[in-house]
Image (cartoon, rainbow, N blue to C red; front, side):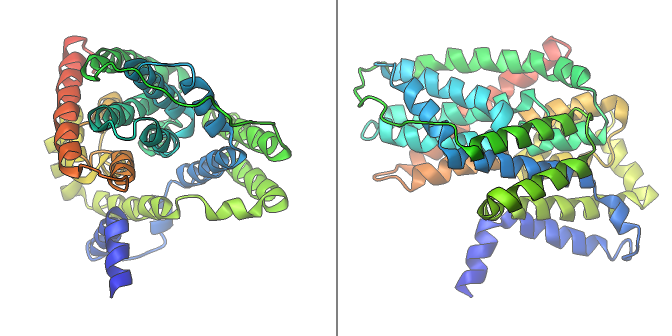
Length: 370
């Protein structure tokens, strides 16, 4: 029973997605059409990217880069700025989840015993990772889903997301004033990095993934190359990808497919969304998180409103702690630290994130980005 409870707690989103998928089967009985609901290109490319990023983590590249860069700063504000920028820009390529898994533990070590600085730095890093990841199609799962669903070109995608991404970067940098500016001392970076065979292996696989995202290469070829390469040279890495996230995608694809198959239901949802795609996606993300929200709404939002959905689910990652699943990673890592003040973290996180969300929503309308 304890194992079941632990699983339900750890994989809440997957369980909800599974229940919704099963419930929707009573609306649209199982048939061969179910196979057509699943966007196999999203699943395949996301899997390949997960493998690649975990491979780079294993080589020690990110650990070396982070320690090397943070060793150059002597003030808490300067060091926080470096960490936030690392999260912002690295998340564009390695996803927001991995950026936080890489840099939050380092932050915990650097600011140990300075709780006020530590909490605010982690909150800022989390916002930076969530907002930086929205810049590219491979920065987070919801981007990859929408990019594929609406067949964006890279140019159109960047034209949609770069303006709000730049604004987000400015907001994050301005927010540094809320971090106390104190002297910090830490040892020189001792981490060393030498490119190995596996480093070059994952560099090639990453190039293959990017080629597939850019639609220069079929996703099936990308998947085949990735599987053959890791099975020959590093088969243990296949245990690292987040398979529960992939399963969650499949469940939501089935749920959305079944619901969309009923014209009356689809028309009802479309009526609610009409002209309010960004606000609805922002609001729904606060409750079920932005990845499931993107999958669900992409089944009913028309192509001409795709930009509103794309921006909505990304800035909707701000706000509640569950608005972006990546935010839960930061909270869990901090909660495990010695003398963690979880209540204070939650309160400050909520205040800062809703402030970010309010500013970004206002900016989207003032700048007429949708």
